[in-house]
Length: 540
Ligand code: SF4
Ligand code: SF4
Image (cartoon, rainbow, N blue to C red; front, side):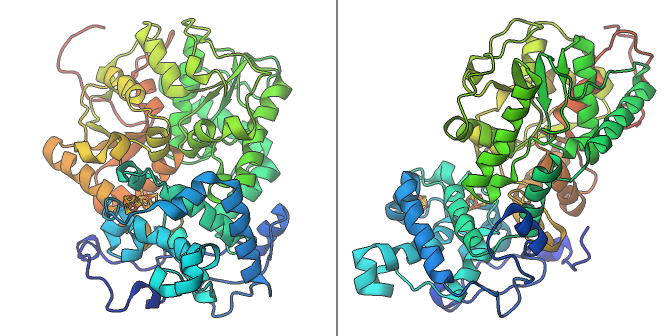
């Protein structure tokens, strides 16, 4: 955990919801340690050819902005109001009904009114009114308008980097106002004058340089996958293949790079490899498309497009028929909401058909990309996998719906279908904290860094409390999820709020239960932890 000092959980949970005495426009931003993220390093901005590379930090008095920074932002806002109809609507539409006010995890966990979605949007809307509406130009503050100043820019930076773009608030808005879209535009405007965070920009730069967020070279990926194959052999006695950059393979498999390199994601990666081996899938990993995640989503529409295009360029180069995607979060939001209009349709690929079951994935007709839990649940439904769920009897599970597959895809049933066939003890968290109402991990959209640790723990508090509920009621000790960022941030969140609960991917769970041809008797799970002793003599 971070070197930044953070209060103990029983102190942090004493949240003050009283608003400040001053009006919101007169309450300056306070860059308190633990609540913001470091600025992007100049070398990363230079690499991506982004504006105003320099050394600075958010707590500096002087942000070293370009001389004409205000004009750059206002021109950028005008351009986006003309280009994105949704942005214009969201600036005009809000009726201040307040339905979203208490739905953001950062407001619930922190009590800062500017983390209410309605007020977060107002930070941008007030400037829109001042420069782009007649009432704002004439009546200024009376019409909810204000000048764009350096202090306003600092406020944007602080609060748009305290929004994980999770879209929970939009589920409750009667007008469908999507705060994530507003935050995206806010960040895009900040980017125009070089105000961005390193935890977003460095992964983007790494992705362009080496193919993945972590900056791992092709040889490193090969070594890591071979190492995971060794571990699989150790646990199961079965040696799995590691197909890499294989031209003419039927399927390109793209996973978040966190699954290659960081525990507990590596166990999920072992799960993918075991599954593909067992069904004899003709597939390949790629060292060029070695990242499913797309941190462009947290930077600008232009970078979303460029990063997404990389996966499809690789599919074309390798000559595959279609693409299978792993347990990633925002990769799927990009795929479902942007791919088609940005880079699609991917007509050079074929409509995905499972080579094992013959199922045609019509939902992927345009993107030609299928989610791994859709693929696996179809295998189970067609009786293609032999599973022994008792091998997961040492786990009492709950499932966290990751924001993007849940709210951007509606992917609720497939992961649960896999879990229910792979394990016997599964308990849902309370209804208003799962499925489309799921609470964010608190560390998405580039905020899962160490310097931002207090806001992460505050933002993750509502999710953690729901986990604590099932831990106390059902003795839950493991939370499954289908997102690499979640696997990382939820682990730290559980250590802080609900010690004793650990985190796993759904395909780790599946492969614990997967009975492979020629395997030895399994005595441990993929982590090397002993399986629960059997008290019955049931056979499969
Ligand atoms: S973090 Fe999520 S709930 Fe909060 S304002 Fe942003 S999109 Fe809405
Ligand atoms: S729920 Fe929608 S309309 Fe109501 S205050 Fe929030 S953003 Fe505005």
